[in-house]
Picture 1: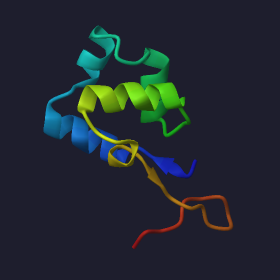
Picture 2: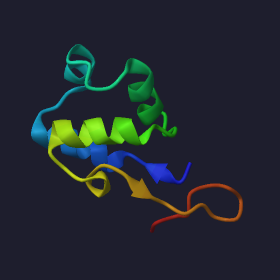
Picture 3: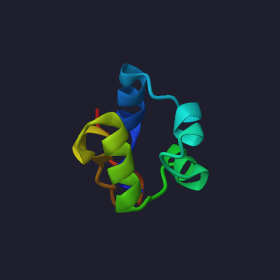
Picture 4: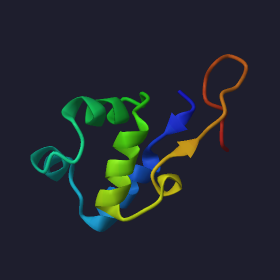
Length: 77
């Protein structure tokens, strides 16, 4: 998947938003949270809910990483 959520988890840590609170406050569903943790796609609504909870823009929580010719993310080194 060419979308990475590393920035999301870094921002969550900075702002003190835990996955426990995401589940407890029903910010997004457990299945959406699991999809993000596994690098799968999620809906725009899910991204919008996370942006509202973190007071940020989508680019602050996700990143497009082009795939190389073998279908793997391109090495960013």
